[in-house]
Image 1 (cartoon, rainbow, N blue to C red):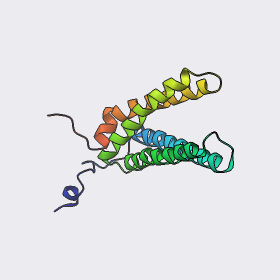
Image 2 (cartoon, rainbow, N blue to C red):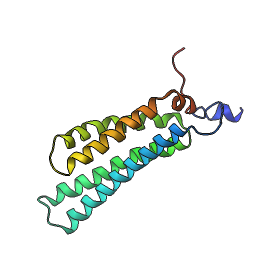
Image 3 (cartoon, one colour):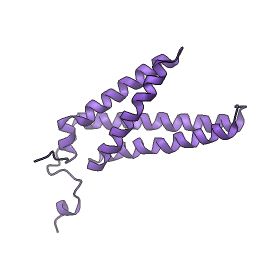
Length: 143
């Protein structure tokens, strides 16, 4: 077997990685870091602070850290041009939209955070469904 037959996720023409793909990977990586940082913050505050419910703070922190792993793996996969990585990256962007909507409907400093999250999610979706990204990942359309 040739090396192309052994790695079906690899694109057929390994040229330079498109900028859109790199940008999508960077956005996924930033989202992963934000989720992980938020989770660590919740864990630390749950363990050292005086939250209403320590178990809820600890569970929420652990959940955010676990959710941060998904876009982190997707970002790595996008950088390595793996076709499977587009699915988790798109799901991450879609999941960010209701969170952004909730932040936009709140008050105070959460509104700008909602705007930033909405812009990042929509930008990520546009980058991920772009034809150049799809082609670079070796994803073929219907014949």
